[in-house]
Image 1 (cartoon, rainbow, N blue to C red):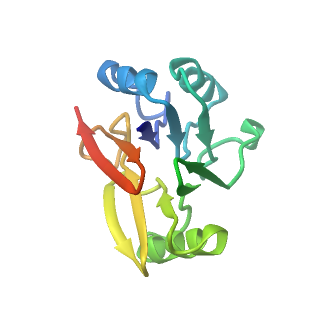
Image 2: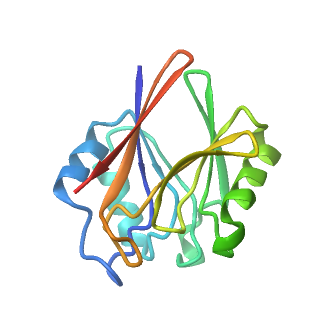
Length: 165
């Protein structure tokens, strides 16, 4: 079994002060960490990498400075499951279809899309693609709550849990 911590939209220090302690523990205990963008400063990216005990996959969001040197889209395979990570930047009205299209273009319909941008939790299937959005790990506006996801990958089974503080 592989445990993945999925976070996004930290927006530190503009909209929030820090990642909550309980979420820091989940990040530290994960085998892999995924951040779907909007760190807003290089220091926050460094902090997430320091918290993590395993590898970190991260993409830039629309609020990130380009000096973070992160890709817009990244793909990773974990125990046979393929994840495509993107922030999802663009109009909210076409968000789900746009992210599903990126996932399909990068890795096909069998891949799972991970994105941020909306600050709202999502676990749904769109155009045959499962999409996960962990919301905002710091509860940054316009989020109404502080959330993250963990994913456990065991063979063909993928179990997603939403955590809220």
